[in-house]
Length: 275
Length: 275
Image 1 (cartoon, rainbow over the protein chains, first blue to last red):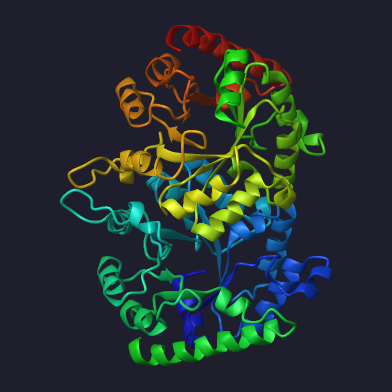
Image 2: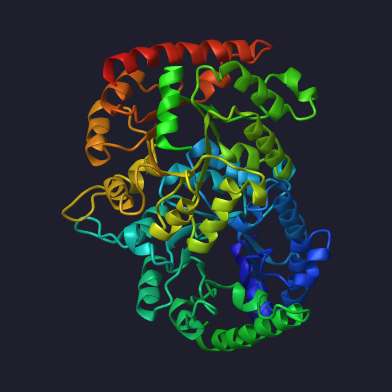
C-alpha cells in the first residue's frame, strides 16, 4: 500500500486507528473454545465489528507463534479476512543480517513463499542497515522501525546518550532516513508525552509514526494527535486490549465495535482540529 | 540444558562446533525435492552425518518462517530429530515488551504450547531488560543476546560511543549481566579478531560466546579459540554453509560429515592447547 492510499483511507474513515490483534487463547470468551479455530473465529468477529472504524490491523506475531504451526494457520486466515483497504502490520520485531532479513521479508511479504502478504513489518534496528534494507526490495511494502518504545526497558539502551550528540533512539531515526524514504519507512514511537512527540516530529517530519499504548496503557490520544500529526496525518494509533477484550462474554464483538467507534469519533475531532 | 552438561558434552566430543541449519529450499540438492518434506529430509541427513562432531545445532528460524506453516512443521520435525545430548539454538533474534516476550518464550521453550522445546533462543537487546527476562523464567533455558554482530550494519549502532564511556555493544554486555547469570545467558559475538575477543573476555569472563562466521565467512578458528576460550571452553563456534552446502550433489551428507570432522579435529587440538 502506498502512503497516498493510506492517507486516502484515513480521510474516508476519519480515523487513524490501528486495532492490535494480540489474541490470546487464554483471554478470549470461553464459548469460542469449541470452535475448530477459536483464534481465527475471535479475530473474524473482531474484524467484522471494527473495520468501519479502523484503518489498520496489527497482529502481534508472538501470540500466534506461541501456538506453533497451527498458530500460523490462524494468522494466515486472519490476514486473508482483513478487508483489502486496511493497512496490515506484522508486529514481529524482526531483524537479522542481510540474507536472513531477506528471508524474513519473504516470510511476511511474499505470499507465494509463505502464504503471507502483509503491508508492513516491525523491525528492530540493532543490527543496522543491512538488517533493514532487504525488506525495502518489495515495492509498496513498509518497514516500521523500532525507535522509542514505551516499555520500562527502553531506558536501558534507547535512552543512552551518544558522545557529544544525541540519544540512541534519535540516532536510529536520523541514520535510518539514509536507507529509505517516508514512502517505505515508519517508526514505532511509544512516546505519549507532548514534548517528546514534538521533538520526534522535528527529526522525522514526514514519516508515519505507529504509536502504541493509547487506551489500556494510558496514553492521551489528544496529546498524541496534537503534537504528532502532520499534513498527511502521519499517525497510526494502536489499541489492542482496550478494544479486543472490552468484554469477555458473548457480546465481545459488539463491545469491541463500541470501543473502536468511540476512538474513531475522537479521532475525527482531532483530524478536524490538527490536520 | 545446564552449563555443566554443555561443558561435559564438549569434553566428550572434543568439539565446540555448532552446525547452523540455514536450510534453503533453493540450495539443497535437487533430487530431494521429490521428498514429501525436502527441508526435513535434508536436515535429517545432515544431523545424522554430523552429530558425532557437533555439540549444538542452530536452525536459522527465518529460513523456516519464509515457508509459512509448513516451514514450522519441518522445523518441528528437525528439532525432534536432533539427539538429546546436543544443545539447540533457535536463531530467531526475537525481542519485544514483557508480556509479548513471554509469548516468544512459550513459542520456543514450551513444547505443550508450541511444539518446540529449544534449549536457547537468540534475542535482540534494543528494548532492554523486560524484553529479555521473560525467557529466563524457564529453568535451564538460555538467552543468547546479540552483542557484537559480524555484519556491515553492526557499525551503525553497536559501535557507537556512549558519552564518556563505552561503545553500545559493551554497554549491552555489562548491563545484561544484571539480569541473568552465565548459567542462562550467552552472547553472540561476531568478532573474529584477536584483540576484540580478548577485550570481550574481560567484560564477560565466564559466559559462553556464540561465534558465527568461522568457515565460509572467513574467520580464523585458531584466533577465536586462543583468545575466546575460558576454563569451561566458553565457546560455541558456528558453521553453516561451509558444512551443509559442502556439496550440492547426492554426497552432500558425506561431504558435510567430512567438513564437520575436519573442524572437530582442529577444535580438539585447540582444546588441548588453550583450555
